[in-house]
View: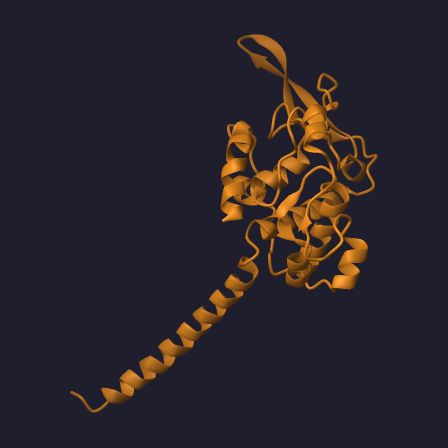
Length: 243
């Protein structure tokens, strides 16, 4: 019930950029890849949790689902709370965050269910320098974004590129994608992999039961196939002497 309440709360705030015309990219995530989920959790804890909470997800649930021993999880991933049963919250006062960012940073427990993995993957890849904005950046998918590009140390400094085009007989400059200063700690492929892992983790937190339900579903399908084969053989045996 709490997750559905959170989903309804998120919808109005996250719908602002729903009209974006940027082509979304498929991250090709895999919820069965535990290593990817673990890396995504690490990225979230290191770069996102300081501002964005997951107040409907417990550390213990995450550790168990992702195959992380609790002692290692608490040592390397649990930066807030005292017990593994605590929710994944931060200590940022809502009043201060609203003053700094214009609105409290949204809870991200269900963001993948609201936005979808394609939107998130493209969003994390399309920040660019815009000195006219308060945080010095903008985003192609979410124009006038109200947060800094926290992953810039990994990606490098992305800038909006332009090209000349003729429009109604006049030569104008139009946006033509993004370039990068190449000053990030990761290569382009490494950054894409990091974002893919992060989106994979966000997809998991939106519906943790999918890890088990999809496994059960595959088992059920295998059972149905085997049952069908035996049922077909039994039918042939029953009707073998019937003309």
